[in-house]
Amino acid sequence: MSRSWLAAAAVAALVAGAATGARADDKIRIMIGGYEKQIYLPAKLAESLGYFKDEGLDVEILNEASGVNAENELLAGSVQATVGFYDHCIDLQAKGKYVQSVVQFSRAPGEVELISNKHPEIKSMADLKGKNLGVTGLGSSTNFLTKYLMKKAGVADGDYTTVPVGAGTTFIAAIQQDKIQAGMTTEPTITRLLKTNEARILIDMRDVDKTKEALGGTYPAASLYMDAKWVAAHKPLVQKLANAHVKALKFIATHTGAEITEKMPQSFWAADKEGYIKALDDGKKMFTPDGVMPEDGPPTVLAVLAAFSKNLQGKTIDLSKTYTTEFVKAAK
Image (tube, rainbow, N blue to C red; front, side):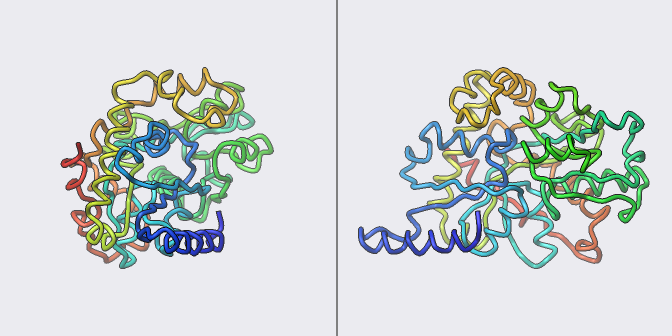
């Protein structure tokens, strides 16, 4: 989705609003960094279940290939909210920009490092020296995690190449064509590649315990985040958004993968409904049941980013300004 298209859409919405007497802020645009990814399930589920309408909200969900692209649309003012990884809230504060996680979807990344089965010689992250590693986008959270894991393995930043390949079909094609020898991705892409035996898992971060092994602690990831000033100026709207997303998280916690799958667009299943259901049943535990940020999470994310990010060197980060629990704790 191009920024020019979004700007044109915003103008059209304003014209329509003027004609009907509606306020410009009646429509909320949420940009998701790949809405077919299961890690971002709560936003699309809230839409499918009618939770936004229940709150009297007119929400438009837009799609981008990666979290960093969605972040850029938020910073440009093209959208009011973004669904992406919480780590962007820390990274942006280091650049002088303040955004907040308002609803914390997950307490684990839901990501794995997949290795192409064309390369049986790769048995550790250290073996990825000199290789091409797939990420959703440069500057994305998959890029952040890749850099951290490679540094932890003792591989210098210049001794491998990160390649932006998105997720889903484009990631799979990059593996098949050997454009990447490994890469970080989410469900349902993981299940699709495991099922065809084209890749295997090296590092698994789909639940809290495995994430702690890889990253040293709880790692809150997928979230609904917004510009801090916008949050302060639109508290009633933010509360309604929080209400809808918390209801979606509770639905996930109290329903089976099969029941949730029936509420999602069939295109998300990638022609493998059974695999989609299994991935959901296996991965549901990554989600928070109530949208509340785990207290031990933000320090872990900061430690991971600080291990490799030049943006954070010499900077003091106020973690209390990177998220708020005000709205989820007040959610109906």
